[in-house]
Image (tube, rainbow, N blue to C red):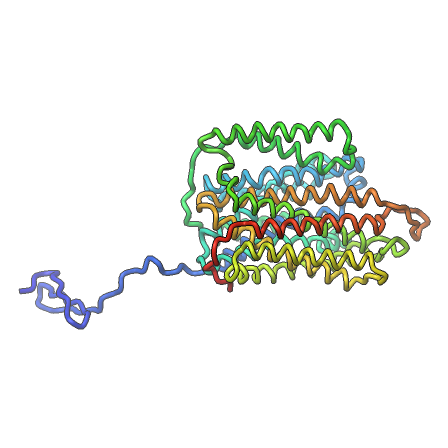
Length: 511
């Protein structure tokens, strides 16, 4: 006898239920939810995160067209206006690993929104500045947003299905190249045809738009790890990075053998030793050095330093060659806008090859992808060296090809680095580890700026220009030495990448 709400299972898989009035309802069984079912791909959220990465990359290049004009625009000495670049580098280097740790502890989405707030506030400060102090404060606030790319890569691990993660991370990594390549011509056009104030108002608007997009589209399901923030470790990291990066960026101006330069390098070594000892003894350190000391992460970060060096060397060398007067050695005589447009396609090539990197990761592994990227970067430098040293003349087409070759290598290499990091750490340490990896790239770019700048300055000669004055430009010898060192760094990155332990083939499939 059937009672109220009694269920009987029939042979055809239909469940029957007899109610109090004697009627029987039948309905097919619904399959239980599949816990392994893949969540949908949040393409809009990925696009918004990449937009945020492009905005941050723009902060590094928009200042370039203004550098010669800053003393007049801000009524300051030329030696003082260089702080507009230095302060952004210093605070960006400090904020990147600290922001990653804060993202792991309190939420990566929140950390991204705060970082974009700093970028927007800094851009507004620069836009309204009429003197150097306020402009430097604004540039410092912009630097606090440099950790967004590492945070964006980390949050993608939380929201993107595994088989789409490789391509999404590659696109996020490529946002650095896209922003860097597009930043120069866009900044030059706005500054030249509108005003330099409009340039920074545009940056503020872009950061605000990206922040609204992140707030509306990014929904991270990862639970923050919580814990107590290591303020002492953050202070120690700040001290040692300032002691390293400040003399690297100002050493040419102060003198490499000057007491201040040598003293800061010595301070770096001392503070590094003390900081490592303190961090190893803390229960909840800012950066887990035991994890970072493991071979896969250690070698990945070393390769990142070398790749960052090779990347930034090519940011410094071609633009000077393209803008050098035609009566100088190998000079092309282009203005900033035309020179930037010649190099701009490299950013688009970097974007395309970041997706190709996902396929290489899936088939051969991320370490092979990183090594291949370094080799392609090296090929670009070989072409450049042969073009400078050979009996034939370089053309703007050759320069574009060289830049695109290096852009392709960077797209592959920069997409492989986060993949190597994420396959070696837990979800709770993704932000911290990606932040440290991004810091390693900053150290590489800073070292390149110091080394390449020193070599090009060493080789300077004076050449006359149309108005009867003379300007200083590098010689072919300076370009050759700088390129040769960058080529060596590319080779080091490839060798170190091959030494990373194999992790097996990735299961991620790019789209």
